[in-house]
Image (cartoon, rainbow, N blue to C red):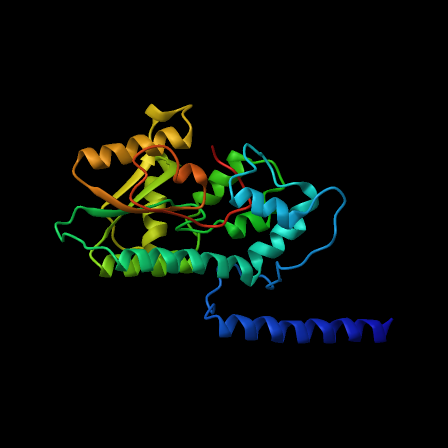
Length: 263
């Protein structure tokens, strides 16, 4: 038994060296959740479901209307979100968004804006979901809202870097979030505490949109922005409902998020 434990410890030690080395080479030194990194590139073979294929279907918007991650895929999604693949995928999206932004001929009149969603786009709720099944547990609004009110969500590093680069290009940022108006103060403080120090507007979901889908709400608010003379040059979010509808902007960018679905 002692020999077996020693072998397991050696395997973990070597695996940790490999993971840390890979992260350093990829420039992924910042962590958004202090748990042991795990690889999301593999996983057990599960009966009747390929969790990798399920995740691809979700990201491609072929699988829609789901309420929870399949229970069989809880471990796979957890490994993906805590491992470097999630960070690599987010970095690819952010880099493409920046390349696009750098190609624009901006007018400099202060009316060019970029839309950012907040949860799983600007701020990460991964510490919460790590304690709640990575989306395999049914959504509990009471528990989640209590987590939000702590105001301790870390920044998604790739999005924070994109945010800073966009500001340096002269593009203003508008946040449109599904969070309610009652969470404005804590959201404002949380954003500033993790590095998002300035923005043009922070739009939260008011009571007028009660019962409306995120697509309807966000489309309406983007339309209001354009009526005020703003040009939406870019739009980034983790949900397809951040990017679908009307007045979506000149170009949209989808960040990975296999933990939940919002219509």
